[in-house]
Length: 194
Image (cartoon, rainbow, N blue to C red; front, side, top):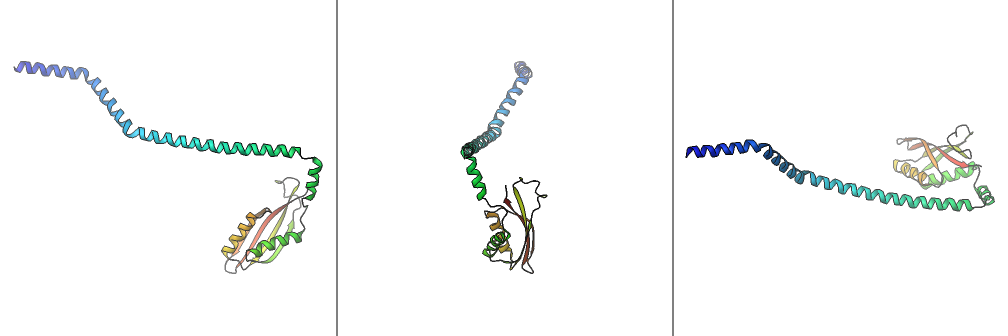
């Protein structure tokens, strides 16, 4: 009886030795499959959902840009249909160099609407040499403003009003002194002169 048991154990050992590679490979495949199902698959699905969402957003943005391009092409076609003599008439309606008085009035109105006091304003027309980055028909006017009764909130609303004004203003320098409630602004504005 012990001989049969020993032979049975030997057969079992020989079986394990002979098929250990297959058993290890099978265990590794099962381990990797379980790892994929538990860890990688949810991450993969989340990533794919994110990618699909990104693609949908990009397609929406692309469609909006295509619509804008179509509108711009339609406007360009309409512009080409305008008679050149009508364009010349329209260009004559655009003001040439603004009179300093008109510019002073516009600035004063913007400043006083914000509850500030315009102490001083100076106007420096461009000489044409500093406008190398502007088209030949666009000219720059530099303004220097001294303001009184200025607090932070008033200055912030003034800058917002300058930003939303129909006239283009570029604030190039700002010096605010809260102790004396004064501020100095250097800014540029532009005019068209064909």
